[in-house]
Each structure stands twice: as structure tokens, then as C-alpha cells.
Length: 204
Image (cartoon, rainbow, N blue to C red; front, side, top):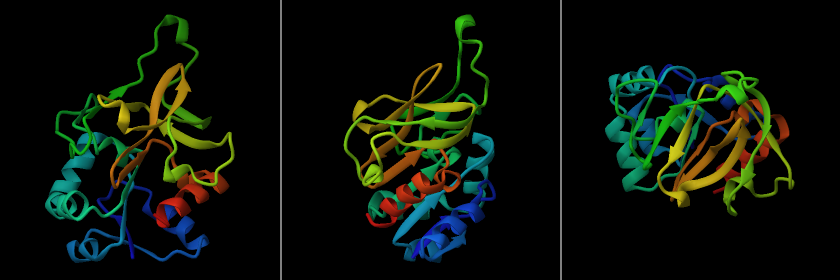
């Protein structure tokens, strides 16, 4: 069973619809027993960092997620804000993140020469894989995804970086540490490329 974690911050319905098109069953839930039975977990997210962490804390999900993901090594995919919540902290707020990556989330910061780049970064953009990874299996040499974000992740450990994307400067667009994956873009809005990436995650 795939559980899309419901903490009132994500476009969970869009992800579930994309999985359904692929013939994959999923459930949107904040119920601890559902999460404990899950074979895969998806942590979506749209909105502010602190609100996300407040909602996860309010629904008593931190301990069950830590046990399921960190102890039992259940695969988890964080999407957009869901990826940022995997880091230690964010410039967007004051609350600590889940801290599963030695990383932090920062706002795009462009100098005067880069003022043509608008914030948020919105629309289609290419990703450049840094290393072979299961999320990019069976994708063409050049593939792009849909982005909507004003903040991006900085990893302190290079081995955690799966891909980068150029928008004014190069930033991290996907991360992985063992069974935990994060993508800054929205695969559920990225048509055939997003469907292939989600298929790869489902088949891990």
C-alpha cells in the first residue's frame, strides 16, 4: 500500500490521481496505523515551512514517520515542500525540520545581473542527474519537470545530491539518502516524465 501523508499542506489529490492513472492504488491518510502498514510513503507539500512542521507535529506524525522511515527503512518520497521538510531548517521559518538530511532550505538570492529571474521559479525546467539513480530510470537523456518554488535546498554532503537544475544559478533539485528521496519539482504535474518518475519510485 502507498500512503500519501495528509498534513493539510499538499496537493495530495493530484498525486493520487496520477497514481490511479498508472493503475497504482494509494490512500491519503494521517492515520498512524495506515502509515505503519505502508509499503511506500509520499510526503507532498505546498505552502510555508513552519506551517508544514506545525501540522506534522499537531497530527502526531513525527514519531511514527521516524520509526517507519529511519528505523524500518520504508521508502519515502518528499515532493516540493515535502522535500524541504526533510532538511534541518529553512530561512522561511524558525521551526526545525525533520532533519533527515544534513541540509538546509534557503530562498533564491539573485544579484543585479540576474534580476531577470523571477521568484518564485515557476514552470518547466530541465534537471541534470549527478549520478545514476533509480528515480531517473527509463527517462530520456533530456527530461524536464514542472517547478513552483521560492526556496531551494543546500546539501552539506555532496553524496546526497541526485540532480541539479539551473535557474539563475545551479541548485539542488533532487536528493537521496538511503531509502529517503526528495524532489523539488512536481512529478504529479509533469505529465509523462512525472509519471515515469513516480513509476520508478513505486517499483523500488
